[in-house]
Length: 533
Image (cartoon, rainbow, N blue to C red; front, side, top):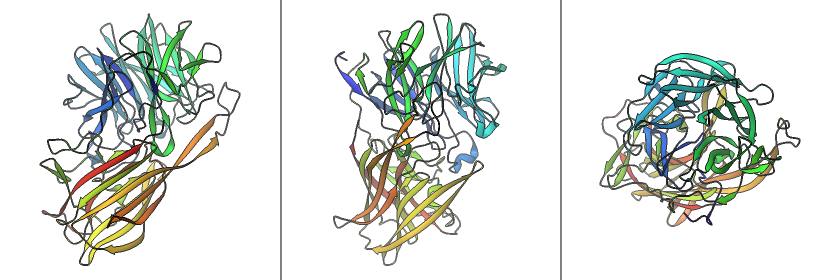
């Protein structure tokens, strides 16, 4: 790629939280958190660190049985991807279950069954390092599961079996200067062991680099990137990666509220043996994020458009289920997808159905049209669209003798001492004719930017941290006879640790036993993005 070309941040306006990146030869690979959605652990590929394509997922299903139901905010948290002796490894935590590893020889192909490394709740954000025949793993801890946080631990593992040999050994504690230190990534360079980790919290924090001559410390820590005078709040957890010409880069996320945690790319330089991420500030020992920069070396590859189906009649990898899918959720036929009307109890809130077919927001503003057939539905079966978050908005169309009964649905998730329960409110309803198909429209529109100020100053920085809180409005509607009807929605609100997702469903919600045969709905989707950089 010519050096005079530049890129704009964010490189991905998509909720790939806790990204980790490696380079193998001339190829870059990224993974990220996926929580309770399935398939999990997205695997993305790039030739230049700027343009990314999603290849698929490392997990077809979450490894624990009870993820057949949505457990909002649980599941797969911050992973780390590494390459060692012909295998690609992803280490990932499930904070209620433990730490796992999954591997493959082809990141675009099938991954092996996950192996459980640590059977204990509360350990999160693992990252391995193979070092002269030995294998180490650094971890953080989750206060919500273990009662405390702000501590990093080191384990040693058997390289052959991944069995824990020793640990945990405390190697760093953030204290008052660097609260909520988490998300560590482990590296080795020029005789130093390095740990890169964010501190200060997701929306108002900063980046640390720590170094030691010994894997077990003590580690000397330094702040290497802050928000500074930019509008890029955080900036949070990410990955150090070197390009093909020896240049260094840092990939991280920024929490933008409803859209989730979007991905940025920062140049990384060195001053006095320490990294500076972004543009140098505060002398030469700290940087701040850049909004644009000269591109890294690599092929000039435009990002591919994400389609809905491929020639095998299956899903493009932008789509995920709300939980581990059942075998009856859908059928693929001749390049088309049919969602089946899976029965669920009528008392179950819509946003807690596992068979919601969802995708992430991919721009600050966009419109999507979803057309679903209704001629194979039976009476009492429904299709619909939803924007999923802590506040969810949905429209449903239920087959009734008079036509299609359109309902507006509003779900609100509540969190009490770690437990989650959902309240559902159904508002207006209207009957429209059943023409054999129904077209929905979902529009995400920016409302305004509200500047909020954190409760206290950032440690070591004189000014109060300011966070731009963009607000987006969700509008759902039925398109009938070329006109939009029953427009419904409100302000979007992100989910538990995740950005909003939108999508569709086909279901039957009543107190009946599971049916052997049920109706189905074929669907097509068109999405028009209006990206704002």
